[in-house]
Image (cartoon, rainbow, N blue to C red):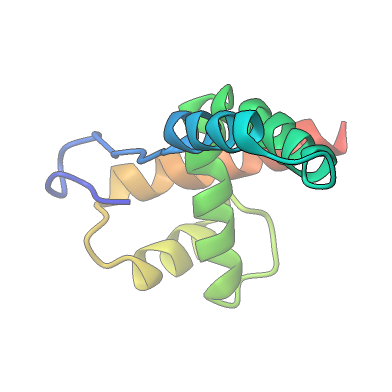
Length: 112
């Protein structure tokens, strides 16, 4: 993930799910009977991920980066923002706060 300057709130989400889905569909069309069940399952999983909102992808990414930085508490705490900025020095404060908030919201949604 890359931010465009410390003041800009733009965070780029890169996803190749559509390309993966297309490749799996092509492989499924050419697959033998023994490979079909696995490819069908892979296609279903990839298709489900293709519809995930950008905020969820950012939240997952931020949560992983915060936890990798050693923070174990709430994902929207000041210490979480600090851990995220330490892990990703290019993030501005506003970006890190927003990302940690998205990570916390995702965690709350999964818990509830």
